[in-house]
Length: 98
Image (tube, rainbow, N blue to C red):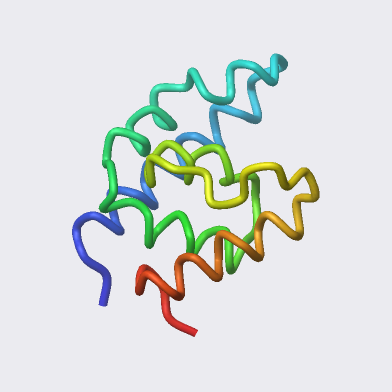
């Protein structure tokens, strides 16, 4: 069963993906209103973003830095390694489960 935040997140994610298909400028990824609404969800979005990162990948690393207000993968430039670090952080802090 999904909760209201999860439904809101899924709706915003779908809108963001739709808008990004129409966008030719990579810098606009983080200016999109749907993306900004995801970030505005604050810490409550961390489990949702981590699950998205876990299940569907995508570039959520910057978003996690904003939501968590820290960069647990600071200095790591390899996406796979940074992804693993963030997921391990999520497990350790009980944002997601194995």
